[in-house]
Length: 135
View 1: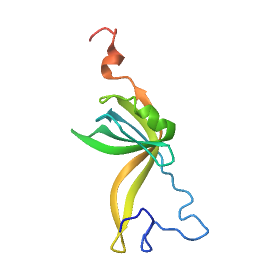
View 2: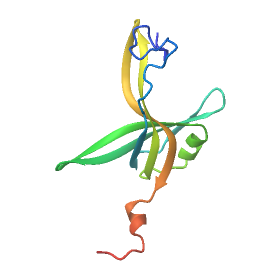
View 3: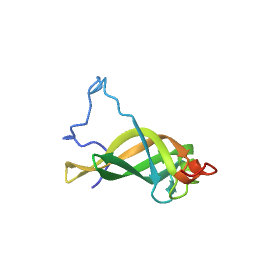
View 4: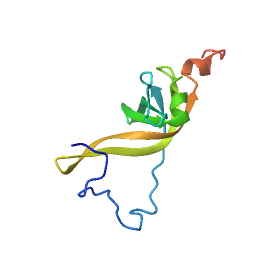
């Protein structure tokens, strides 16, 4: 049986009165390109959830790395994301979350995703150079 509830052996489980970590920050600002149109679904309570994939490229030495990161947006932010076209440059601010579930009495770990607090459209390179003289 699968559930999103923390398992008894989950190292992230905190049943005590004090927070596990008081001075750690989980805040991410990531810019990239929307890989495909967002998948939007409604919740039983009438809210919205949007699932996106953001592709971020970074240079490390002479290599360029591509990171494909799943992003989840909820509520009005999910409704906004519904309007975003594939290929749109975005800035997403949010927090990292690792998916985990229980199976056969043990915690299983899934991938990491970004839970969005804000999503901002950015100009594409073509838009930024539109009307500007070529070099």
